[in-house]
Image (cartoon, rainbow over all chains, first blue to last red):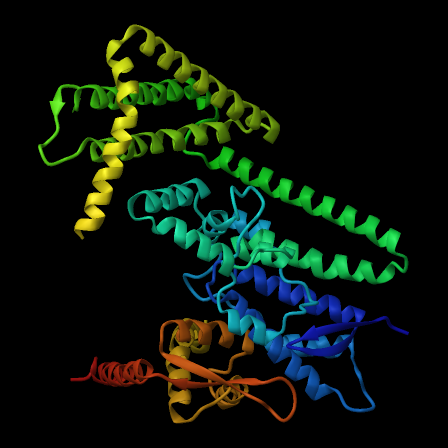
Length: 386
Length: 108
C-alpha cells in the first residue's frame, strides 16, 4: 500500500504515489535552479508542468487514477534534463545556491496564470515602511532602487509642476496593495524570497490550516506562522547584509572611514547652508552675483539639487561602510539614530550661533517670508503668463 | 571520439534552425516538433526544447497561441514571425554556402 499525494498541474488534479511526487518535486526544483537568471524562467517552468500533465493524462484511464512512481520516473526521463540556454545560466553560484528551494510541486496557480502575467514582478503598494500609502515604496521595490530616491522624485515633481501629488493620489487609489505573501513576493520580485514565501505559504500554511478544527488553535497557528514569516524575512535581510559585508567594495576594517565620511558630508552641509544664507542676505552666492534674469528662489533650488548630487554618493559610501561593519540590525538602527541626533544638534547649534553672531543671518531669517512671497508671486505670474 | 560525438556541439547549435524550419511549414506544438526530430540525428527532449523556444520567442523569431486539446491541458501552437522567416531564409542561404565550401575545399 502506498501513500498518494494529489497535486495541481496546469489547473488539473493528479494523484501521484509519494515516491513519484518526490521525484517530480526534485525535477522541478532542479529545473527552477538551472533556469535561475533566465528571463523566461516562470514561463518555461509552467510549460514543463503542462507537458508533464499531458503525459500523466495519457497514462490514466477510468479504472486507473493514480500515477505510479515508476511511471513518473519514465515521464521525467522522457522530458530530459533542463538545459540552460548559453549565456542565460545562473549569474552567480552563490545566488543559485541560495534559491534552490525552487517551486514547490503544489502550484495552485496554473499555467494560464503564469502566462497572463508574463513577468513575475508586479506593481503593488507596500505598507511596510511606508510614509503615506506605500506608493513610492512599491515603485522602489518594483524597480529595485532606494525608496528615498523615488520619494525625492515625487517631491521634486510636486515642487516643479505639481504633478507629483496628483500622480501619487491616483496611484494610491489605482495600484493594489500587496496583502498576501505571494503579492508581497511579486512586488519585489526577489527570486529567493518569492520562492520561499510561495513554497511556505502553499505547502505549510494551507495544509496545516485544514488540520485545525477549532478556531482558537487556528488563530494560534496563524500567529505562529506570521512570526515565522517575519523571522524568515529577518534572516533574508541578514543574509543580504552579510552579502554586502563580503562583497562591499570596501574592506571591513574601513568601517573606521565612517566618521570621516560623516565629517565630509557635514562640511558639505555647512557650505550649503552658508551658500543659502549668503543668497538670502546678499542676493549672491559667496560674492558671485546671479545672472540678471535668474530669480533668487531658482538659485536656491539649484543649490538644493547641487547639494543632493554632492551628498548622494557620500551617503551611499557611508551606507556601504555600515554594511561592511556587518553588525546586527539593532546596532545599525542605533547608529543611524545617533547619526540623526548628532546632525540635528549640530545644525541647531550652528543656526543658533549664526543667528546670534551674524547680522547677515539675522537679516536672512527676517527676509525669509518675503523670499517665499517672491517665489509664490513669480510662480503665479509665470502660470498666468502661460 | 566518434564522428557522432564530435558533432554534438554543432548539432546543438543547428537545432535552432531546424526548429525554425519545422515551424515554417505549419503551426505545431512541442510534441509535433519532437516527433519530427525523433527519427533524425537531432532527436531531443522537452527539457532542451522549452528553454530554446522561449528564447527564440523572446528574440522575436516566433510566436504562439493557446489551443484547447481534446485530451489534457491546452497546448501552445508555435508559428514563425516575419523576423523568423527572414532568419530562416538567411540561414538556408548561409548553410548552402557552407555546404559548397565543404565540397569545394581540397579539390583541384
